[in-house]
Image 1 (cartoon, rainbow, N blue to C red):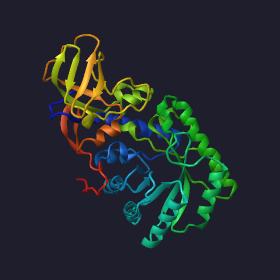
Image 2: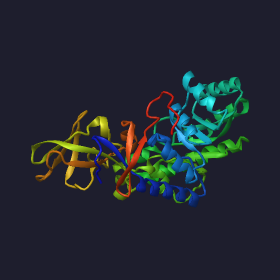
Image 3: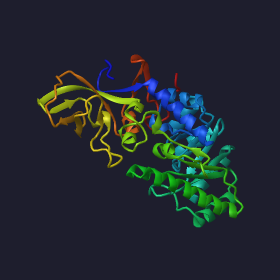
Image 4: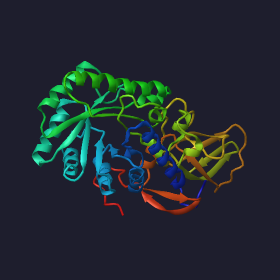
Length: 365
């Protein structure tokens, strides 16, 4: 679906978004777990409000700007899933703890002790979750006894920040084996929680979940909460992984055909600064999906040009408009200041991608 907005444009189908939000809320309820959706996907106050209205227990954020936006949009509980070790980030996160329930994910004594000191200095309390590496190779320590020993020691001596549980992230699901990654998440949480409980440390929260591993989860097992983000939009990667269909993709980047130098080549004005030159999984062969034109491939992206190619001649004149489902909706959204919102196929307004930077953001309307 295209719409007459100046291109390149980020376009949101609100009907699909609302359906995605409701489906994930129902899925979490059926599993008997809390939903803490990740704001990094959309960075948008209106989407946060929709997620909270659907029953989210809290929201997950990566940056202080996202946390501040979430607070302003009505979130009463916020999980910061990125260690705020810099003094400025830590100060902004701790300031929120005076007004809302704040939890911070971390994986080092240094980060935990800095959080504890900041809480004591401000006279507030925050909680922390220790992050486990279940196979992604990003943040987190190895599951099991060695980590449990470190966490138990910290939990016993910190006073301003209290231990609440464990977190893991199955990002290696994007390699293609979603079910194995979901199992890795559950196993990491189960073995480490058991090791902590043997040491007399209760583990109230056991947090997991990417969008594909959340959809793959059929039984909660040790998981008490899930943190999917991409599900509100979905994208070409989620379709390639089998987590969504094209009808579930709420976000497109629309572009205009600016050149037809060859019958098999189409040039759009939506390049890497509008679409994001990213492949998250080897299962996506190109740099986006051209909606309604299965013969076209997004072969290359320059900063202001998208190079689309086809095996056979394509009848698309200069001035035609195309909608591309990005490979990574989160990265594409972050490239735009606002999204054009459609409902019932008609334009109904614009929503700001308000927390796309790192500085404090203005209060949402």
